[in-house]
Image (cartoon, rainbow, N blue to C red; front, top):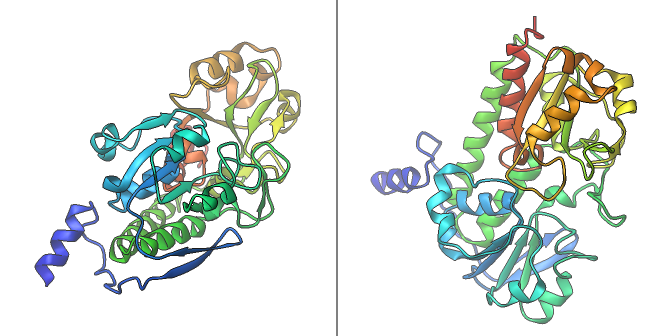
Length: 338
């Protein structure tokens, strides 16, 4: 038995973790997901995953063989899943159509964001999928203490924490009857989070004013900046740095004159392959910052205190822990932790 468990653990890249629980899921299983009861008569056999973060969680649980289609990609998949991902049909880089999702004949549609599959879903409403006998699952991070009814990226009423990602992993592992994988993955992520915090215990951000810039529709216009309860805000709290934005909107559009008043000492720049908006390209962001008459006077710009961070680390995903590590290393490299 010990040899079997060891083999399972290594297979999913989780060696060295505590022995997982072997409790099996009992079907029918009913969970409450984003306020709605969802019942599974058995483990889903075919999934369409909408959202890169959701897809990477499914990959991390060893469920690649069940995914028949994906959509909404910001950048490259995690390297260890590149081969598996290359074999799965990509329905769209951005929002897929309802017809393309249904055409894969899934018994589960799993979405990272409620604006794709929700009351005003751009892909489809949960009721539309239910009418076809298709279950839906939404990431808890996008609905717990978060309101998505006013368009945009929503309003988050409470600070995001990694506990919401751990909840997602636990629920999905129960739905698919792979609890042992879920337990191991959660343990691994918690260990990495603890290690990241420990690594900066002597190099705190010390209330440094920091701004996270995701993108802009117009390079010279207002920027999508991380709100006070977002995943980047959790990164900042963990490090001890300070967000220059105080609104509860997830990614409010903020003018650079307003940002200049806070004069951030560090600007975290999202990197991505996506080219949906004018400022998706990080090189375009840096060029603007260094040449605009307002932004070029910022402390962070004069001193080139730019931290390049994968965009997925700025979303509520398993990569948020990468974001903690990335920003901590940036603060250290700038000598701002002294």
